[in-house]
Figure 1 (cartoon, rainbow, N blue to C red):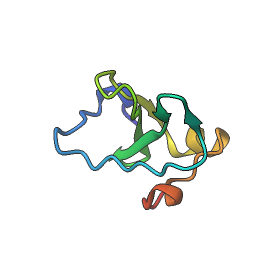
Figure 2: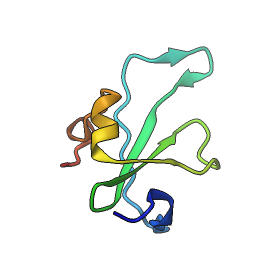
Figure 3: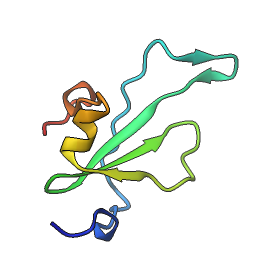
Length: 75
């Protein structure tokens, strides 16, 4: 498998945001997730959209308890 950071993130990447329950005085903080390749995902922060997303494999998302189905995406 190529290095995760070698996968480009398309300008029109379909980042999904399932929010709920994690609120702060300045609003809800949410993560964003997009599939960027076979077994490659980009995970971002909705409160800091200017930061580059982190990259993970499906196994790494699973180990962190992040289910792409919760974002309306299939692994």
